[in-house]
Image (cartoon, rainbow, N blue to C red):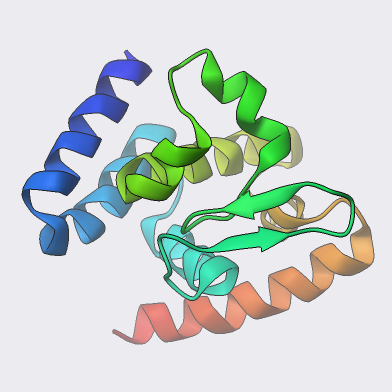
Length: 144
Protein backbone atom coordinates (compact mmCIF):
# COMPACT_ATOMS: atom_id res chain seq x y z
CA UNK A 1 0.00 0.00 0.00
CA UNK A 2 1.43 3.37 -1.03
CA UNK A 3 0.43 5.28 2.10
CA UNK A 4 2.13 2.70 4.32
CA UNK A 5 5.30 2.95 2.26
CA UNK A 6 5.34 6.76 2.67
CA UNK A 7 5.05 6.35 6.43
CA UNK A 8 7.89 3.82 6.58
CA UNK A 9 10.17 5.94 4.42
CA UNK A 10 9.49 8.98 6.61
CA UNK A 11 10.28 6.99 9.74
CA UNK A 12 13.59 5.82 8.29
CA UNK A 13 14.50 9.36 7.22
CA UNK A 14 14.17 10.48 10.84
CA UNK A 15 16.19 7.52 12.14
CA UNK A 16 19.08 7.74 9.68
CA UNK A 17 19.00 11.07 7.87
CA UNK A 18 22.46 10.73 6.29
CA UNK A 19 21.75 7.29 4.87
CA UNK A 20 18.05 7.80 4.20
CA UNK A 21 18.68 10.21 1.36
CA UNK A 22 20.32 7.61 -0.89
CA UNK A 23 17.91 4.96 0.36
CA UNK A 24 14.92 7.21 -0.39
CA UNK A 25 15.91 7.70 -4.02
CA UNK A 26 16.58 3.99 -4.54
CA UNK A 27 13.32 2.90 -2.92
CA UNK A 28 11.19 5.55 -4.65
CA UNK A 29 12.73 4.61 -8.00
CA UNK A 30 12.11 0.91 -7.44
CA UNK A 31 8.56 1.43 -6.17
CA UNK A 32 7.55 3.69 -9.07
CA UNK A 33 9.68 1.97 -11.73
CA UNK A 34 11.80 5.01 -12.58
CA UNK A 35 15.57 5.50 -12.70
CA UNK A 36 17.15 6.48 -9.35
CA UNK A 37 19.99 8.37 -11.04
CA UNK A 38 17.43 10.34 -13.03
CA UNK A 39 15.53 11.20 -9.84
CA UNK A 40 18.72 12.42 -8.16
CA UNK A 41 19.64 14.48 -11.24
CA UNK A 42 16.17 16.02 -11.28
CA UNK A 43 16.40 16.89 -7.57
CA UNK A 44 19.68 18.71 -8.22
CA UNK A 45 18.10 20.69 -11.04
CA UNK A 46 14.87 21.35 -9.15
CA UNK A 47 16.26 22.43 -5.77
CA UNK A 48 20.05 22.02 -5.83
CA UNK A 49 19.44 19.28 -3.29
CA UNK A 50 17.71 21.59 -0.80
CA UNK A 51 15.01 19.59 0.98
CA UNK A 52 13.38 22.79 2.29
CA UNK A 53 13.40 24.74 -1.00
CA UNK A 54 10.34 26.88 -1.74
CA UNK A 55 9.80 28.74 -5.00
CA UNK A 56 6.91 31.14 -5.68
CA UNK A 57 5.70 31.02 -9.28
CA UNK A 58 4.32 33.92 -11.30
CA UNK A 59 0.96 32.15 -11.62
CA UNK A 60 0.44 32.15 -7.84
CA UNK A 61 1.41 28.53 -7.22
CA UNK A 62 4.52 27.44 -5.37
CA UNK A 63 6.98 24.58 -5.68
CA UNK A 64 8.24 22.95 -2.49
CA UNK A 65 10.86 20.51 -1.24
CA UNK A 66 13.68 18.62 -2.90
CA UNK A 67 11.63 17.67 -5.96
CA UNK A 68 9.81 21.04 -6.15
CA UNK A 69 6.31 19.60 -5.96
CA UNK A 70 3.83 22.17 -7.29
CA UNK A 71 1.04 23.31 -4.98
CA UNK A 72 -1.51 22.34 -7.65
CA UNK A 73 -0.90 18.77 -6.42
CA UNK A 74 -1.64 19.50 -2.75
CA UNK A 75 -5.39 18.72 -2.84
CA UNK A 76 -4.78 15.31 -4.41
CA UNK A 77 -1.95 14.53 -2.01
CA UNK A 78 -4.08 15.46 0.99
CA UNK A 79 -6.12 12.27 0.39
CA UNK A 80 -2.98 10.38 1.40
CA UNK A 81 -2.21 12.59 4.39
CA UNK A 82 0.58 14.38 2.54
CA UNK A 83 0.68 18.10 3.23
CA UNK A 84 2.96 20.94 2.20
CA UNK A 85 4.62 20.71 5.61
CA UNK A 86 5.13 16.95 5.27
CA UNK A 87 6.86 17.47 1.91
CA UNK A 88 9.17 20.06 3.45
CA UNK A 89 9.84 18.12 6.66
CA UNK A 90 10.26 14.64 5.19
CA UNK A 91 12.63 14.38 2.21
CA UNK A 92 11.69 10.74 1.61
CA UNK A 93 8.04 11.63 1.17
CA UNK A 94 9.05 14.40 -1.22
CA UNK A 95 11.15 11.99 -3.29
CA UNK A 96 8.31 9.45 -3.31
CA UNK A 97 5.88 12.07 -4.59
CA UNK A 98 8.36 13.26 -7.21
CA UNK A 99 8.89 9.68 -8.40
CA UNK A 100 5.13 9.15 -8.56
CA UNK A 101 4.64 12.32 -10.65
CA UNK A 102 7.48 11.27 -12.97
CA UNK A 103 5.97 7.80 -13.33
CA UNK A 104 2.64 9.38 -14.30
CA UNK A 105 4.41 11.44 -16.99
CA UNK A 106 6.15 8.29 -18.24
CA UNK A 107 2.81 6.50 -18.47
CA UNK A 108 1.54 9.35 -20.61
CA UNK A 109 4.60 9.98 -22.82
CA UNK A 110 6.59 6.75 -22.52
CA UNK A 111 10.18 6.44 -21.28
CA UNK A 112 11.24 9.56 -23.15
CA UNK A 113 12.83 12.92 -22.47
CA UNK A 114 9.41 14.40 -23.21
CA UNK A 115 8.13 12.74 -20.02
CA UNK A 116 11.04 14.23 -18.05
CA UNK A 117 10.33 17.67 -19.49
CA UNK A 118 6.64 17.35 -18.66
CA UNK A 119 7.58 16.84 -15.00
CA UNK A 120 8.64 20.48 -14.91
CA UNK A 121 6.77 22.44 -17.56
CA UNK A 122 3.72 22.56 -19.81
CA UNK A 123 5.25 24.48 -22.71
CA UNK A 124 7.45 22.55 -25.10
CA UNK A 125 10.12 25.25 -25.06
CA UNK A 126 10.47 25.16 -21.27
CA UNK A 127 10.43 21.35 -21.33
CA UNK A 128 13.42 21.34 -23.69
CA UNK A 129 15.34 23.75 -21.46
CA UNK A 130 14.61 21.59 -18.43
CA UNK A 131 15.67 18.40 -20.22
CA UNK A 132 19.02 19.98 -21.13
CA UNK A 133 19.67 20.80 -17.48
CA UNK A 134 18.65 17.33 -16.33
CA UNK A 135 20.82 15.66 -18.98
CA UNK A 136 23.87 17.59 -17.75
CA UNK A 137 23.06 16.74 -14.16
CA UNK A 138 22.53 13.09 -15.07
CA UNK A 139 25.92 12.92 -16.78
CA UNK A 140 27.51 14.09 -13.53
CA UNK A 141 25.40 11.65 -11.53
CA UNK A 142 26.48 8.70 -13.64
CA UNK A 143 30.18 9.62 -13.37
CA UNK A 144 30.02 9.07 -9.60
